[in-house]
Length: 227
Ligand SMILES: Nc1ncnc2c1ncn2[C@@H]1O[C@H](COP(=O)(O)OP(=O)(O)O)[C@@H](O)[C@H]1O
Ligand SMILES: [Mg+2]
Image (cartoon, rainbow, N blue to C red; front, side, top):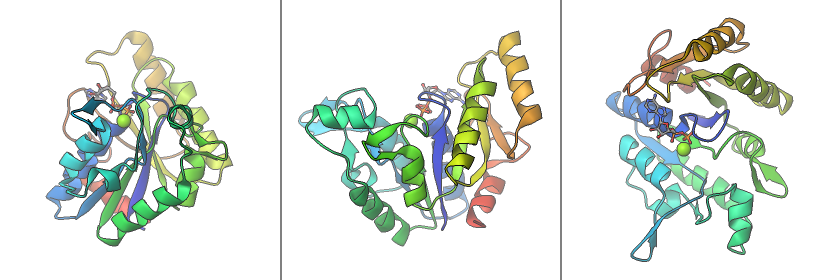
């Protein structure tokens, strides 16, 4: 399957930003890219229409003109975990609906980029978390890590959880979510990069539009295409 599940160590670690860079890179290679943000929470409402900023940003980068309902079937108002935000609206997230949306996207795409919400243990409902969703969609993971103090622990725990759940991890992308690294940020990141049990796929410098070496977005896309 030409798809990847973009997860991360946390919310706000750079999943959408990395997803946009990958989508744009794939597009410049002439690939038809579809995106899926199965659940987005904290969705704003304008003139009776509920938006989904992450899903819409990914779609713009990918040139994906599918209806927002197809790209983001669950757009939830409350800024909370998907399970909690769904419950607040009297809903239960149905994995079948997400699977169908994914299959429809995959049927007319060279590459499908799926962005999870938060990290792997974030719940969609009582029976399903993000790791379970990636397994259900049979997608390998790309783990986005934040270049900041704490990333060693958060990233290693995420990789351990992925392995324990039988998920394949293509590698890690480090996103620089702030313009400067403190000495502590830098030493923590260097510690992580020296100890990674999976490939480092690239770093996205602050404000950058492509991944920096060791692997740029095109090489990463080739790796995805080979899965
Ligand atoms: N490489 C980067 N350069 C500049 N800003 C970044 C970078 N990565 C993330 N950010 C910023 O950090 C915030 C969180 O990133 P985002 O991609 O939305 O994370 P997530 O999707 O994991 O919640 C956003 O404001 C985003 O613009
Ligand atoms: Mg996001």
